[in-house]
Every structure is written in C-alpha cells, then in structure tokens.
Length: 547
Image (cartoon, rainbow, N blue to C red; front, top):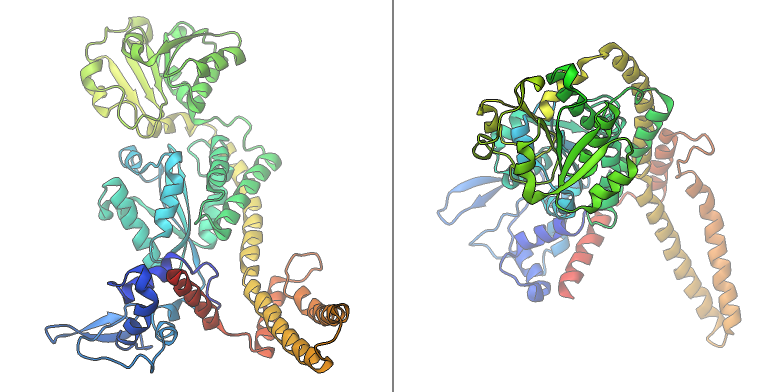
C-alpha cells in the first residue's frame, strides 16, 4: 500500500528533529547526515537494542532511532535517506491511514464532563492545527455541540493516534485520561463514516431528526475551509455527511413532527407547570443567539404572549421582534439579568458563557414565585458549558433542568421514530458504500502520477536525443513541432491506461476492477516504489530546512 500523500510537514519534522535534537534549522543541512549516520542501527524485526550510558541494554520500538554513545559510523557509508527508509517510515509505507472518531456524547457522558471538553467554534482551527501536530495524525476536524464532543482524524496508526488524541483531550479539559476512556467511544473507518452520517441525519440526536445538527455539520466544513489539516479525506467525509443529512430529510419523514433541543426545552418547562398557567407564566430568555431565538419561536407557538429577553446587545433582539408577530418581546441588557430573574417564573438560558450565570448565592435571595405556577422557579439550561450551576437545585423553590433532562420529553412516539430511522438507515448504508468507494479510489492517484512521470521522463530523454541529432541550427518552429509531436504520442498512449485507473461509475467499471488495473500497471512499469514517495518527502523536508 502506498504511503499516504499527506505524510509530510510535522511528521517528517518530528522525525528529523528526533534524529538531531541539538541542531538549529540553519545548521540542519549539515547536521542531518552526520546525526543520521551516528544514529546507530535499525532492525526490521520490530525491535532494536539501545545501549544507555550505564551500559544496560533496553529494547526500543522500531519507530525510535537508537543512538550509540560509543560508536561512530562513517557518514559516507550510510546516507540519511537509507537510515530513514529503514526506520520509522517503513511501517507507514505498508499501512493505509484510518479514519477514526473519538467521541463523548449525551448518550454516555454526563454534562459535567462534556462542558469541560467543549471547544468554541472560534477555536476549531487552532484545535485542528494542534491535533495535526501530533505524531500520528494527518487530518482532523472538531464537532463540538451541546450534546456531543467528537474528534474526527485520519491516523497513520489507529492505536497511537487514539492514544495521542485522548491525551490531548485530557490536557485541554483537565479530565484524567482514565475518566475519558471510561466514557468515550471509538469508531474506525466504515463505522466512523456511518456514525457521522447518522449524526448528520439526526439519528444520533436526543431528538430524532432535529435539524440543528445538520447546520452544525455544515459549520464544521465552513470553518475548516482553508485550514491546514482539514484535508481531503476529512473534508470529503463531512461534505458527504451533509449530502446524507439533506437526502434523509428529503426522502423520509424523519423531520416531520420532530422537535429541536430548543422546542424540547419549551415542552419540558410546560410539562412542569400547571396547564392553566401556560399562557400567563412569566418567561425569561437569557441569550438571543440561535438557540435563544428558537426558544422564543416555540414559546410563541405554544401561546405565550410576552417574553423578556436578556442579551448583551439589542440588535439581535430587535431582529427577532421584527420577525415574530403575536408575541411581545421586551429587551433588557445583561446588567439587569438578576432583576429580570426576580420577576420570572421560568428562565431559559442559552449563552456561550464559560462560567455559570446563576449560582446558589445569587438565586437564594430571589423572591418566591406564586402558587399558580407550582411555587417553583424553573431554570431550563440548554447551554454547554452550563449557564446554571447544579448547586441552584439546593435552593428552596428552585428547580434546574439541563440538556440531559430533555430525554423525558422525547420519549413519546418511539415506535414512529424507529420506523423513520429504519428508512434513513437504508439511505445511510448506500451513501456509506459510495463514500468508501470514493476513498478507496484515491489509492490510484499515486499510480496515475507515477505513470505520467515515468512517461514524461522517457519523452524528455528521447526528445533530447532527437534534437541533438537534428542539430542546433534547427528552427524554433521545428523544435516546437517535434516537442508537440512527442507530447501527443505520449498522451494518446496514456489515455487508455488512465481511463482504466479512474473509477467514476460512468462506464460501469467497478472499484475492484480499477484497483486490479492499478496493481497491474504498477507491476508492468515497475511503479511499486512506495519508498520513492517517502524519499521525495524527506528530500523536500530537508530542502525546506536548508532554505
């Protein structure tokens, strides 16, 4: 299997820096050959022995470059490229990179942990860069919502990639690795693809078929555009997931009657207060973003005629006022939040604040609510991280509900949702096969490039021979004609093989047949040079350091 085309940058830099840790970039061109030749020896059996300063012998895995403190090998005897080819990179030339998802969702992880793992959208590009800086990660994407935190990566090694990403998540969140391992789920390749398609279709949501998750998947692609590390495989996966989400909602009735997290929050609040108070309960919404706006819409749909909205700025609230009719929307600045809370029976919170807006100390002094709404002030918190501290539940006359409590609302109509999910699964299965076929077809790209390069080398060599025989006084027009003739012959000869290396379903050619053709061409033209790709990348990295 050919080495992945994105095995560059940080991976090679890390490898080179481990070889010559004391070398500065400016001196690397001189240091690399010397350090490599002194790096000791490499065993293809999987383990080497490193002799420490104490004389003790300890085994090291193949991907470490063992250095002997007592032995110096002549730099002319072993080149830098030969050393590298025999060491860490050897494994990756024989291994196809894997798509892996490391996730923690509402189904298995408490909100207390999810809020620590949450990554704001503005930080996604930086997170992608940090993830791709890990030794075994080539590409990455972050899907962080109120219900899930999922990291999608293309990993050179499944085991090492998962280990590195889990440690990165632990470092970022402060959650011990052991706790993450207890709650996380791991999916690879086809299973990872199917999972994201199910997520995009709304099958993995707390509320089956809810549309907000599709918008969030679209946002991953939008934010990832132009970000180094949001590469061909991951971007292709997410773009295909968007197609799946749209198709499922178009071809099934999964979205009909389905509610969003926001509408489920409204339903929950109305379940907890007497039905006679639904129209007159005093409603307060903290935050006028997407979620807050949906809460207001659903309150209006349920017959609420007045709602107070607290937000940092008035602009968004004014826009909602213009859009919605039949409901009085009153804007209040954030500084008046506690005063507004004192006059509210039900408080919805949906802000991006990373610290709680309500805690026990500032809630205990709020006046009691009337018996007509059950003598309980309800805090319905649909934010992650949470806007309402769990300690507020200890206050007499207060009840706190968060996104994990919405399960009570969505338990109805289970049979109907399962039927719709089965229809969606058939579409997802079909789309998963198409995506896997597309990803497998990428294997032919290196062969296409190598075959063209092979033919071009022959063309140029033969052209030079021909032109030298014709003499230097040959007119430019004639030289150009000979050059065009050689290019035309090569292109016509390559047309057939190239067509049989492409799998676009236009001619009914199967992926299996395309891959068989690829292997046949590799054998016929001696293109099975996995390590030549690696050499090119190593040379490019060394040249980059030299410059």
